[in-house]
Length: 408
Ligand SMILES: Nc1nc2c(c(=O)[nH]1)N[C@H]1C(S)=C(S)[C@@H](COP(=O)(O)O)O[C@H]1N2
Ligand SMILES: [Mo]
Image (cartoon, rainbow, N blue to C red; front, top):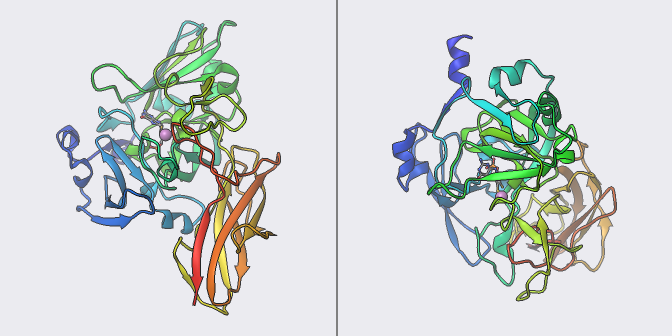
């Protein structure tokens, strides 16, 4: 392999471990420190925008570990979220700062694996037939900062999501080599990052049937190029339709096990009330919980922000995005009067049932104030909540959002 390829397959967060140890983590590297601030429509007020390695300036929730939110205007740039604008979420501060993509391996084992083996990146790339699809990655806590009553956790607005084209190998094909025992019940996934005191290592699990569905993939490309370091270089698990928590980055260990995995990040973390709405009354406790699963249906206006101004008497084309947990969007309706009356929006091109779907509608306002709302349905008839649902972790917000504009 030529030097160029080798270089391309090596990713490091410039500045290395020393830089990462500092609080100013993102400010280091080739990219000059690009810093500004943004006012967010939540009680937290102003937030800094900082350019981390391989990233344009993004909203910083924490810098150690990096937790970066995509500024919402990016979703109006196009249906694919550019790699340098894609949000970043880590749990533990001990994240990899330099990975040689050619030397990285994935170990496959576990007590229900008949034939443990080690897979190199070169083998992953050359010995399996790749698949490709567009899919949304959304953090469970996307929009948590909009919860009322408020909940603890990262006070995100709506930018902990992104839509990318993923290329990789079906997990099913890799597991076919592992000769699963018939006792196999779950498959666990671990990446190179570690818990700070040795505990809390981020490990996730899927039921074996889900792991073998042929769609869950070991992705090594994102939007036609290698995955940015902070998004999981050189290989990440892609679990289309499921919340980002399952999309394990820098994937290095896969275990097939004969039991239900009960590690911290499956229990008690990332669980939702075990009922139809995954919600409870504020101040109460859920009777029982289950691991978070598929996305609920959501839609957003992207072309005008809340508080924006329109020109009275002139037609505006309002644009936005909708998505769901994998049935695909069937319909989007819009209202310009705060939800009293609704009409159908036009849907844009279908880029696959896991992708953002564009919608547009024309609107010619008279002078005055308008409360714009959009509501999507998926192909199995599921839709968005008309009143915000509440739950203690601040997951799964999917209420019909309101964008208030003035026409002058
Ligand atoms: N190795 C590792 N993978 C991880 C996490 C993590 O902390 N470590 N966080 C998960 C969570 S909760 C989310 S929302 C997604 C975010 O993916 P991104 O950082 O590529 O946007 O990564 C997931 N994969
Ligand atoms: Mo997340």
